[in-house]
Length: 414
Image (tube, rainbow, N blue to C red):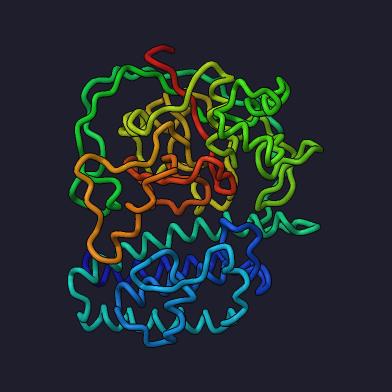
């Protein structure tokens, strides 16, 4: 990417982050509702810190920001524990916006004058993808804040829709064999997507749509959250400890809360805010399993990763899957990209020959390769163009505040 194209993309990505914050009050952007989420104010500052620290290499605005807005980089020393980010009432939001403007001016000047070497330009491109990740986190984290209010407000209004029946659940068979997995050497990809390698995959079948609310409703009606035989041991312990009875944000009156407000649970909509444990249990109940990430990548390999329901479309909640014959992927598989991140059965681990990025960026992905499950495909909160078939997201199994769902698979059969 040349400097002019990079400068233009930088402006677009940075402006988009501010657009996402526009419906929020100052108070909304300070609150941290759960320990795993972060305040919007922190996201605004941290993404800016990334460019100042790792691209410009000079903390000229306020040296204390190295501690306040470092996320998890041990090489930069002390930082604020994630669960305590919402307690940092200083600096105020206005000061954070001054910080963003200052760094934006300095990045623009560095690009115009050619002050950034190829390594810094590569880190700048990475920083833009990093900010897009935080754009999704802003939306999912704001949802935790608004859902915690006594009268949950609407972030962005969405018209009421008629309740429908879900698309038929069918399976598409893949023959397996030796396949190439991972990102090619050309173009941008995160280090955890490389290197490409050969893998042997047995024949498998994968569902034509993700799990829908109708499937979850049937699981609940059959006592799924009360029956330990469907659950992994850790999952059942979590169900009991956390008193789970339904997906996150579902209510006892048959409604759910999302960024568009309170709506009736639509059986046809793709189910979201499922933990890995819930996705795995529902798959077992359906007589199936979750796909491995290799199976998922094979299934998605021929699809256009920009065609799907993403944050740019403004709905900010999963849509119903289309019927298989009207799918966007060869008439077979619907919603592989967008709508919900899909849990896989694969633990997050390095590919054969994996090498972390040099320096501080070596902490970006590699050190989290323990206790996490891989998710694929992006969601309705993901910016369009950010994901690809090889993209590997990861979260711990109990996590469900993200826009996560699943599709089921079987061994070599319809």
